[in-house]
Image (cartoon, rainbow, N blue to C red):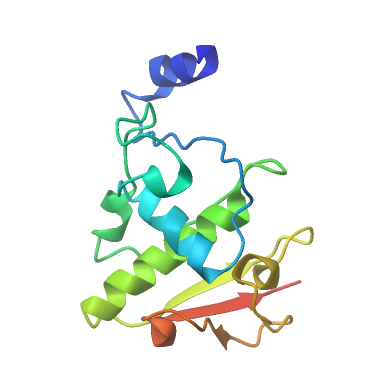
Length: 148
């Protein structure tokens, strides 16, 4: 909690800080990514065993609602959840774009350590060939590629 308090003190005034808990289970597969996506969008967190009055308030809905948004980059050191978060954001964006007829979402990974195939539990062609992410209502709107 000490570090969360420091983050608030240092950054909350200038940045939209969204805190997410460390989860007991690894997020893998389209269904788990969708559950995580809903959590970081501010939906009920009980699906991950968290109380609805969680100490991790906040949401990334502001990103989804920006219609002019063209790029989102997820970065950080190893093991912080870049791939998981980017997959969740792409899934949420694709759901929104499909509902509003705004076109597809392309998620690109350049991370040599992890890949989108592991995250979505689906073969994503390496080398830049776009692959539709299957199993989602908005499957035509989510396209993924690994550039490694």
